[in-house]
Image (cartoon, rainbow, N blue to C red; front, top):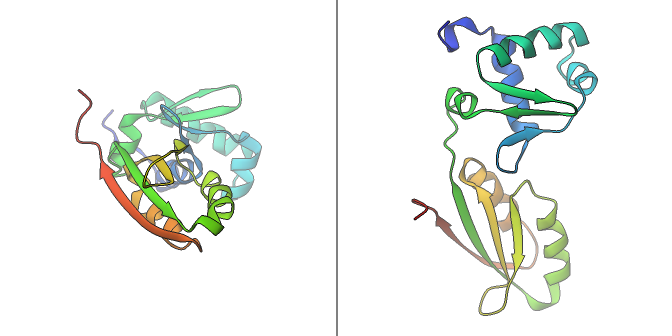
Length: 154
């Protein structure tokens, strides 16, 4: 069986939905019930189960009780490049609490409050970099962002 040509458009759509709904931990994982996913895709639970079975057989997902993980193979198929990025954020002093709360709701790996000439370090996956930068920049009180993409871990 060779990857993409064996998947239906619905299965590709399902991978995309799982990717968008997922949050990156050490893997890209979705914590939704199959009933929720089936409802959101407008298909039966049985149809979803069949699609998930095929995606699992092809090595695009791993499943368990209450989660679905996308594999590196799935991210590659979707054209997503893995890798870490750190965004340094400077915030207006009077807006800190507001910005902290908003940033904690973003789909990022971690948020660090630090001392020095920046206020926060946001650790994220670079596949979401454009989306994250846009969301952070739109927050009232954000003075500046400085982005560092990890080239390699030594």
